[in-house]
Length: 187
Figure 1 (cartoon, rainbow, N blue to C red):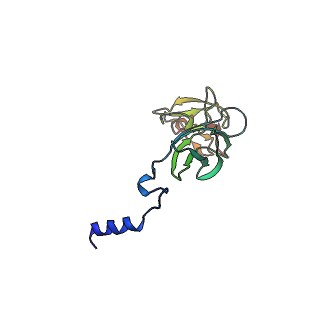
Figure 2: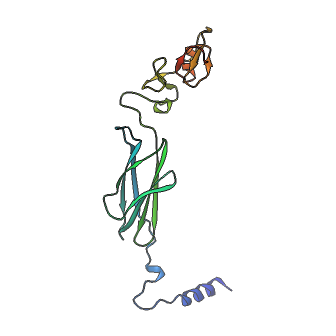
Figure 3: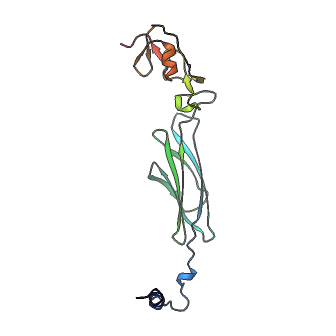
């Protein structure tokens, strides 16, 4: 069947009764979803504060939030602000917005572990990668400060146990690899 004949056949097959929407009247534009997510920096609980701005000229039917691919919460009315507990970082937070016409939009953001004010907990809190989270010897779980990794270390044999449980030739070698010192030689 020729292309023009096929189009004519299709058009006659979808005749729309008066007062109903035709295919040319459907609005297939997606809604707009803007996501802002940040780790909660106070309190003992790991949590993420999420704020979603959703807009669509047809109206928003629902706003959903997912954490690492699993729906965590949703709302059908503003405000679209959420505080959600998380078990660990990093966490992928996604906003899913449905409009009243059945169209959807998605916006995602990865939330990293929050650094304590004026300090760090682990190396991921320090950027660029030439920095590491330096801590006092023996304070493996404490708060440190971002410091440059040594570029070269003396050839001194003074073994130390790193916070990762491995033995290093000396404290400088451990620091160069971004590892803090727990104690002397690992047991």
